[in-house]
View 1 (cartoon, rainbow, N blue to C red):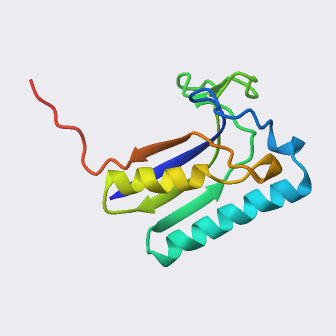
View 2 (view 1 turned 90 degrees about the vertical axis):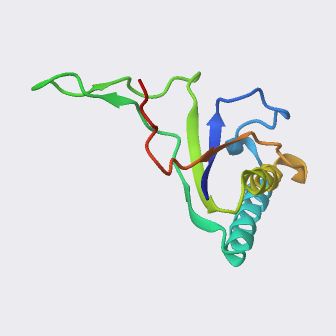
Length: 135
């Protein structure tokens, strides 16, 4: 079954460790974190569990239809309080328990001082069938 592991710049539950934003880490700390992510992806690839992985920039906006002939409505640049998606992994594993285990491993990526950042990750199964409608 396929699962989406969402990484957040901010948002979600309160951080376990306040490690500050990555742009305040040393270059060596950033390199160690990125290398962990690469090695993590390689391990998933070797096990046949990696479907896709992608990082995203912090910029983005919400957009919605505002009626025929009218421009889409946007909320402009993200405010500091909004949740931002940093990237994702799509994995194909045999169970929910394995998906949670993989997310836990990813959460151990190193941050400042080489310590695990304990990052919260959102785990979502892919919808495989439309929801049933009952009266």
